[in-house]
Length: 98
Image 1 (spheres, rainbow, N blue to C red):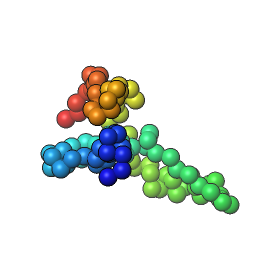
Image 2: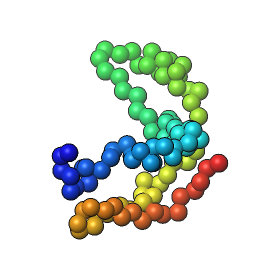
Image 3: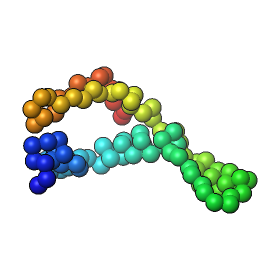
Image 4: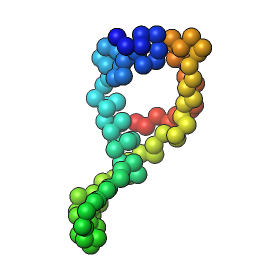
């Protein structure tokens, strides 16, 4: 393992325990919160016809719902302790959507 004593050695997708604890509802909530128009960018390149771009965009994306209000960008403050072997997060109050 590269960099075993640094945060880069931490599992990027979670531990086996955290992955097994994920519920379908948690994934659905995450998707509905983050995969929303306000978090999307449509990019077009090359010789495009602006009228067609708007027509196609409207056809495929106008039905998307705005979703729930996303977490504020500063919903937690993270910092590493000096030994960098542990994580220390302070969470702000976050609304729970049911």
